[in-house]
Picture (cartoon, rainbow, N blue to C red):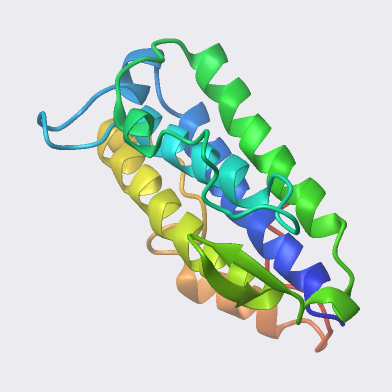
Length: 184
């Protein structure tokens, strides 16, 4: 396998965690904040999408921190409906996926810039592969708290590790990406 194919699957997996979390929340819960210093799920979604649009729009020819990006506004309460929020989320992910699918393994050593700092494309991808899951983990954590007992596990549910492992080890060894079963 090359570098890009499993990396794209990894991003798709993290997007699915965000999608599945948001689907378990009411509209009000998407905009709930623990306190005035906290971020709502909506704010985190806006930040991730804003970052994606800035980093991956014309990433080969322009700096990843675009002049038009207004990062501070990503944390403002200016989106107040699910449809607008999800549309923005999808726009960010589309930008990222379009960028990733435009890259070949021969390109990954090419230098691009983020805030005037040179990165190989692989370094820039790895940077974002750490950044987005960090925030998606926040989304999942908030979602799990808000959903309470209604929460539907996004991985192996508590108390089911043993049966999950028994099932896995009852099958022949194979080659695949671990996210395949979660992305169905």
